[in-house]
Image 1 (tube, rainbow, N blue to C red):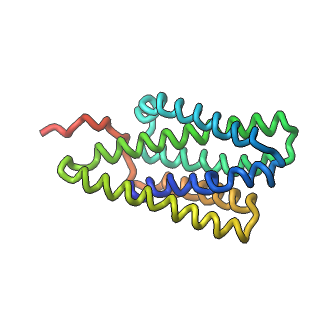
Image 2: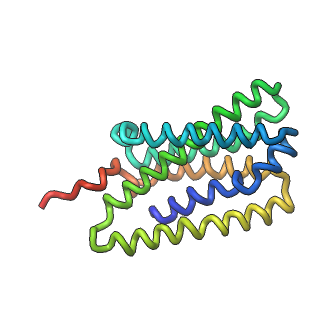
Image 3: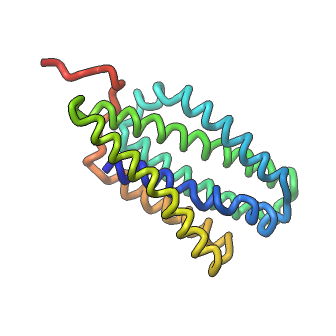
Length: 194
């Protein structure tokens, strides 16, 4: 299951990575300032996610972290389309806030999935499982970019972003009911008592 989550995380980034420039130019009629705003705010969100992850993981189960992160990521893609047509100040404010939240979510997921992987796999199998996890996660990027390119050739960007946002919301609902993801991730250095 963690391999699929890792692959899904990377897959989620593909439409944004592939379509940032066309999104800024075609949907928002903007330029490099939109790309800069997306990048800077996402980086700030990632830093906050790394800092706040330990306190959040102590309060929320892994299942709810995944479900909440999926819903927020879906909201990010929907917000990118919802801002089109707003006055420039509001548009930049919403894009900046949504990008910071998305960066926060990506960072939170990266750290929590990594901790869960380390804490739930026996030491003797960790190398093989980590290799499989990384293979799935890396495979998702070219597959996601190829799928994004194929769909972008036939569908408008707003349709793609709305579709991904809805898919992420539905996935988060499914994750919320997935009992196999119960419990909070333990720090990787802890081992079960004999």
